[in-house]
Image (cartoon, rainbow, N blue to C red; front, side, top):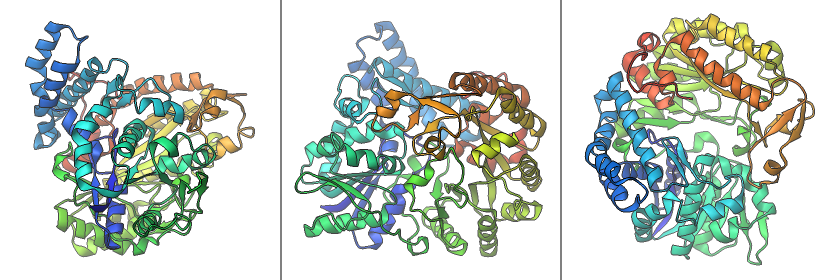
Length: 582
């Protein structure tokens, strides 16, 4: 028996570990508990999207596929699937033609799953069933629908026997986004039935948002799917939950826990204080098969801070999953973590997932890494602020920072003010100029249709990008989504939102809500503007890598292999199987 098994379920990109498991594993092991961690997402992708598995699956479970087509696919296409994964794990990953060919092959492999589960839309972006993921009742149905749920048979054959053999006292399932809901809840349901003595708890950024809804409506979540859920940061709650399970105590002292008490009444404990970041151990990636990810060299995720030091953006709801105070891990300690991880796992690529890492933190981290003589490469997310001047950009580039992602969002002053971004287009341009001159590749997020934004105001953002394209290296675009936990929803009248879809509001686990505005672009108009903009990007930039594949893992690896100048100059136009990733 082990104390705990921590699981990260599908569906997620299989290119690097997600930090929640290694961080929690390190903490619980430091406290003396026996813990295993399993990137079940990676295991799912790598097992199902393989030549042998597809050969068997299509031979036995694709009755609607025409016979001649099946024979042709099995003979000529399926053997290429393992070859494509081998390319992604080799130096050929960095050859653009080979990279595109491999990615295209794997996308087609995912689409073959549609012949096995015709009611489910299968692609590399996710497995989308006919059920609303915003409704716990619908998700309950999805978790037991054998005709259209691609996870159930896989879990029963490939996962449950291994977990049963581990005999964990507790299974913690970490769910970061809606793409993992059906995969995670299907697993929880099976485990609750298969291992009645094992406590099933759920956590992660998404379930922190569901805490209130589950407290008010505990069925079916707490009666059929799992025993408890953790709201907020998980270190102390998991530790206290394990201690309570071992000692046979009640859960009253487990901070942030939502559960049913002995009388069947739902309880939601206060979150309590988080563990100071400087007291946490570095993440532990043992148990994770780093060589199995679909990249030529591992990328390890890190956090230098928790929460956001700005935390004013009216559209953002990320604060929900953190304790209400911005906290840092000392840059010198973080540098020591990176060196230790390099020595232990032989890695040199790191990706910081902080909501925003400040210029000052980046400066101090880079200085510590330079002093150590380390040869590491890392990426970060940050704000477009004046402190990213030429001197700091040159310093952090010397310290290994090769890739920075920024939230531009808009270049129109009125829209920026309504978003409460606290940025200015002139400052943004200066930051792009400084990063470009220092040799740091930049990527910026924009979106269209913030409530009240007109087409003319959105066009100002497009014009800004056109003007600054030589120094604004890459763009990730989208359209505004109204989030239930964002300030703009709480103050929707102030922002000109005149109605919110009643069905969306009624869904207990609904996050994104449809809405109507009094003025400015409607949701449909914003979507059309975004799609038009994506076509304009090709006119502005040609067909660079980031328009073909904007995965952060892909960009980081390509930047560090080929360099910023190559990233800006290489054009995929005219190559086979190349299209804009929308």
